[in-house]
Length: 137
Image 1 (cartoon, rainbow, N blue to C red):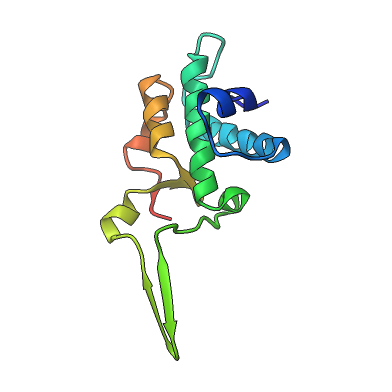
Image 2 (tube, helix red, strand yellow):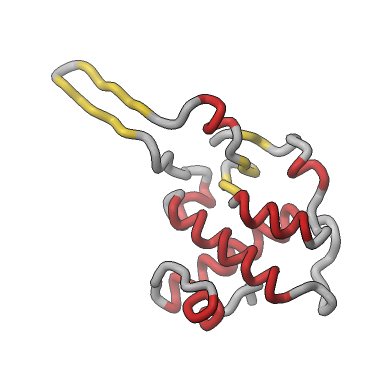
């Protein structure tokens, strides 16, 4: 079971609408991502409200990055614009500094808000926010 329920996601967090099956899949993915970056074990003493919020932000972030495709390292650059004219293709995207500020682990994008909440809870591995995880997609 994931760290967030559909009821919390829909009624408290007011997240993006999705079917129950899609939510279950995304919730498990977000929970697995969280488990990858936390140092401290998540126990009954962990603030479950904040943990649910962190998981919800991760679900939303994964959805903007392509949904389940994002877990296969195929996250999209939502800000890229491609134009084609005859034999020429022009792609405009994020600036280098904005692109480099994105965090990912093995190609899976990490929500900055999720990282922030987990860090505030004291659950984070230091290598995540110390710049040792991969920056950029």
